[in-house]
Length: 92
Image 1 (cartoon, rainbow, N blue to C red):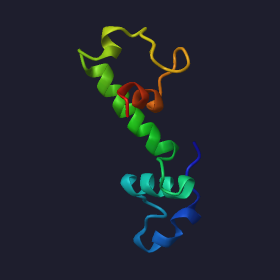
Image 2: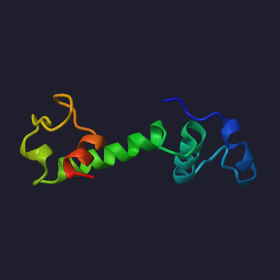
Image 3: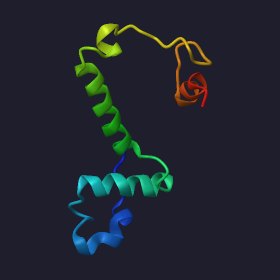
Image 4: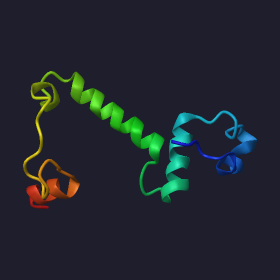
């Protein structure tokens, strides 16, 4: 993924964030610039996903460790199970 242009950090240049941006600020600014703050951008999303995957892979009782070939069966499309499918299954 391409980094944010310096212009996206121009308003915080007096803090030096245009040159040395704290990670937490970069992730929030990326979300603001690319998705109006409604979702994480590519870097923030990747970091969260990698942490969650790492937790699942490290948990001996996780479905990922128990059966790495497992595929979801409850989704609207075979092999896919998204948030909407989970909410439908839960009756929400």
